[in-house]
Amino acid sequence: MKNGYKTIEYLEENWTEKELRTLAESIEEKLALISQNPKRRNLK
Image (cartoon, rainbow, N blue to C red):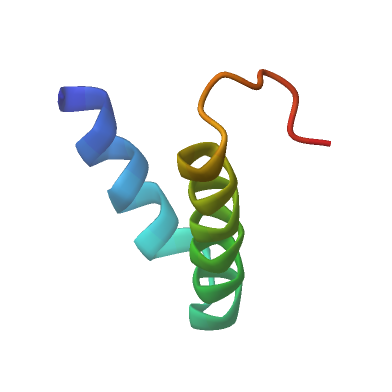
């Protein structure tokens, strides 16, 4: 999990709040698609 903490630190130090919100929204959208259809591999 060490790399995960470094990633979070990097994002906090180098990304704006707006960029982080956009990333979080994108991740949430993709997770919602995966949870609706977990067997599908491509999320284009």
